[in-house]
Picture 1 (tube, rainbow, N blue to C red):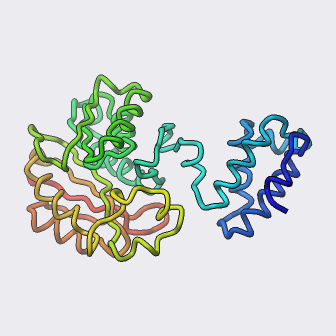
Picture 2: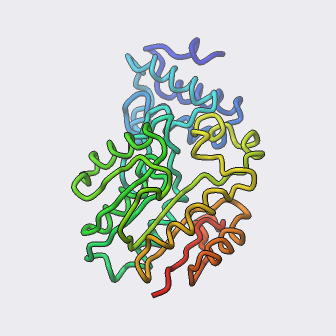
Picture 3: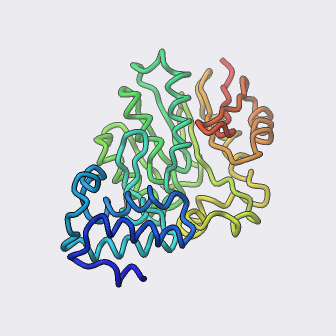
Length: 292
């Protein structure tokens, strides 16, 4: 039974949920029950709790939207892409096809920043986000460091526009600037913290990525060159020259890249280079400090 044949205005929520579970299971979507509930909730505009307490309510005018959302999710499109929103560090951010969909594991950078700079949260820090994308990191950091100012840089004009819209939505316009540029080129001044989630997938590995990533995240945000390390070779020396004495660099890394990135950071003069794991226990972030 196709989604279209199964869903009508008179279809009850419980019936629709069962249909979506079957469809997602057949398509090989991980955790089809959870995905079905989230998709039905987003498309019908009701809370997950409402699906539980009122399962016999008909879909009504939402039937067509549920059908559309379900078909797109069954084709592999992430729900965050379908609704154009992603939760990150408690913030609701707009995303578009031109920006990387921020993942929870990237919050490791925010957590680490709060830990290392916990005694400086009331200071007017300067923060730089290289490859700003949706603005997830700069928005999260400025929401925590309430006296800080930030600069976000991206080579994509479309991405820079998305970041600006999220900066505005988060009420951070007075403390953040989004620039169009090639990493640090043209930047001046000194920063206390530089963060980046750069492209780090090896070019040859791109075809084997999960379809949710391969087909829906922008290639420019994924492709890290032949060995996946091209961006780190640009970022590390340039970041060292822009950091204040004692300032920190924090970069997200891919699987098996920790030792290589630590070596790159070390060669550029950083001290205290450390590998940090995410909540799943995977190497996720490399940090380094410019010596005092």
